Amino acid sequence: MRLKILIRILQSAIILFGFFIIYQVLRKIFGGSWSIEELNLSLLMLVVGMLFTIVIVLTQLYSDHNHLKTQFGSLATDFKINLKEFRELTNEFKSFIIEFRDFKDESKNLSNEFKVHIRKHKN
Image (cartoon, rainbow, N blue to C red):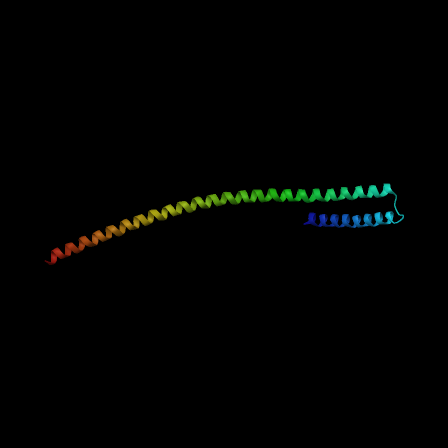
């Protein structure tokens, strides 16, 4: 948070300095104010300030990218683990369905045998 505020302040100062230099350049064109050396030096300072701001922002983006890279790596690992667990549960469920079908078939056979046995005793 402090870094963002510092960057905003630095950017604002550079923008204000840039407007001041543009003002001085226009004054020089229309007759006066600073000498050429002072204008060149101020333009050089403006470019260095802008470069400094760009480097700070680029460094911050690079660190954010590395943070996201590790987070997505962790997310991929968690997804692989959950996918493996899901496949195991799916296989268990399939085996449960097979056992249930076998139980259902055996109960039908037992029911048929029981009906046959009762018919024999009735006759």
